Amino acid sequence: MRARSAQHLLRLPAAAVGETTARAAAEAGLRVELVGPGTGGGLAEGMLARLAPASAVIFARGRDVRPELPGRLVAAGHSVLPLTLYRMDPTPPRELPPLGPSLEAVVLTSPRAAELYLRGVGGLPLPCPHWALGPTTRDAAAALGIDCHIPREPTMASLAEELCTI
Image 1 (cartoon, rainbow, N blue to C red):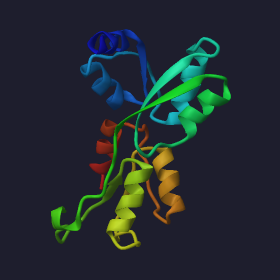
Image 2: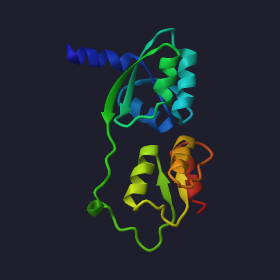
Image 3: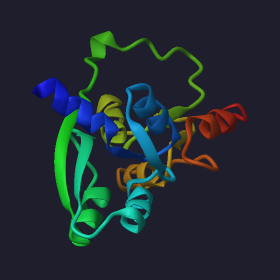
Image 4: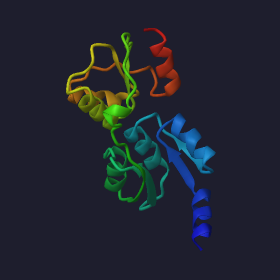
């Protein structure tokens, strides 16, 4: 019965926060029908325009979650069923590679990554440019005292293009 339920879930429409997540979801067998602009708030707007009233939404997420997406859905009268799939834990310092003499930039991919980075470097950002994948991470990093640039679009491809200009 459990395998049958999992197969049913794969047939449900899925939404992804951005292109990279959409590709990973499709490779895992999900039917991605909505790709957001790279932020939880932006994805919530797209979902709210498509959901029937009082829909139930399975929210596949990490242990540490930003409130924008589920908060907007609940506020609009939808049920959000959290499904925690992963967690981000800090890498023990002894397992980190040495930084080397010429660190060109630091890339932060999530608010949680910004917190862990700052903790890992002793509370002060390293003296080099910092990049955030998107505006949510940039704003969270700024609240921690980290000044970040963001790429034109919150995608890995756009970020890579920007990093090539350093």
